[in-house]
Length: 231
Image 1: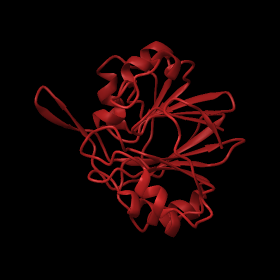
Image 2: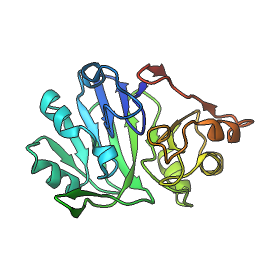
Image 3: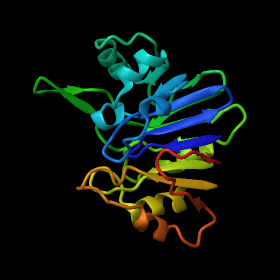
């Protein structure tokens, strides 16, 4: 599996013949590189929730690539109103087979909405995303969330080995609490921090998470923006 981080919670996951974009807020204040290369060849887009910094450039990418958008029904309806047509709607607890991989939405403790013409639009429940490839390790993108005890069930049911973990504080777990979640509830081979460094009001670095993860068996990878890592 090849993973590329584009800042915030935006990732490109390559497994088998699938190129999956998760929460494609690309470009963003952290990543201002080649967006065409970042999106190139995308076959699927998976969205954790409806906030603008996660839906990001889904409409533009979907139009350019024809990628299948995997999201909850409320987000699908909202994006359908902006001209997208290629959806695979799902909701928390449901698993959908996409050939090279399957997706399952799991709970996340957060919110999900957007503003349109000064009105707040509800966009369904926030979620974490479990990606189960046919021939790679199971990956868990936590979305935006706090720690919660039912993370133990996510681990029991799906046994993810790669964790994409929000650590920026204020809107999600901070680094120390995120490390507690990883160590208490999961047996990750690899943990990759996300949702930091994008805006001044969240943590600028992953240092607190890296420090709190020391001494455990999980390898922490802090990727360089736009540079793929193999896991």
